[in-house]
Length: 553
Image (cartoon, rainbow, N blue to C red; front, side):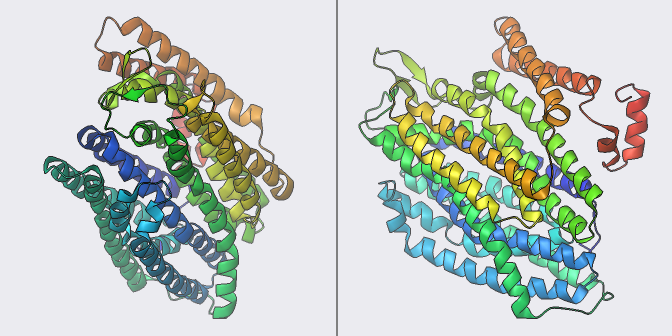
């Protein structure tokens, strides 16, 4: 709880560990929830959650980054009084935004539910409306700790939040389903657990801040700019980031609103139909896609996100100290970590989409095509995940490249890249879904197009204004070659063992062996440099061990 400063990599690893726990617990929430309440209730659940996610980003995306960046710069100049002033001003702004967001969601639920033409969605939106106030409080305190390069409270609060989802949301969803409530009400019960999880997280973060205040340092420069000056800088940093992030959040809203409506128009682009004629076709398909394909798609970028959070105060501090060498090393290391994680994940999910989905999820709703051939939900969703897999790489690269622009003072440029990407998403989704030979595959393909365009713009801006050049050969080529070998290994092993062994065993064996091949080749091809290892906690000891094992020369 203290103000102890953590290194960039150490803080990122703490957040990465918490995110792994969060995703593992989240899977324990979403996977059984999808198996128990069904695709239709999941459609309502995810539609309401996507609306909340957009409002959440509008409320909290920019200010935490602005807080962490300003506090990191003030800390680098030893201005303790200014650190406290930044926090108090941001807290006031956050609480006002939280109250307004809660009121808009609660009283405007019926109007919002008309957008996808699903009036029963309103009960779900009202259930999540209190989240806005509490998440604003949580985000403000997280920004304060992150600016001090102390990621531990953020990590703990994330675990508390997702545990609330698991223990309360899953229990409530199962209870409502077994009680015979309608799909929207079942979804609302499950969303109630999400709300309570955020409340528990807010209680913990408030306690953590109280302890930090009790133990905070009192030395340092007493110099502090005026409240007006601090508020002006805070808003000038936050608004461009908020606009960029809120525009990016439209990608999920485009899927839940535009894509569902497009699919609803005489079932354009759907070649599979639920056997039960009473089942809403588009919402059922969207619910399965979000619960299965998007859940798996979001796993690797979530591991990358801690580096995007940690790199902002690290780069801001290096920039304030005019340490150009440290800035470049930090950026090189971050891009290499992103490529090492996202490239094998993308290739693996691409070639093993169906076995992995069958391993983790029940078969889902039953479909049939025009010829009367029976399909299950997993048969429909797996090819959509394959189409989406390549976007994993660009999603991770967008997170860190956007954070680099924000930390370097060029947050306004990210608005342009985000606008271009989202515009491409909307147009390509509308066009592709309407093509019979593409149909519902237009949803993941449009996401891939969106992320590719955004990443291209981000890297152009970083090269031109930050004066940093990403070396494809040194940073991306070796992990890419190792990832291709990893994917080939997984596919061949599954083909060879799929008939001789039970499918779950064959799937896990293939993934495990492919991971071993990837790690071995990564070190043999020098996917990591000595400088990268030295940036890790206990880096000298790890380097000696790897050198002794001949993994690094």
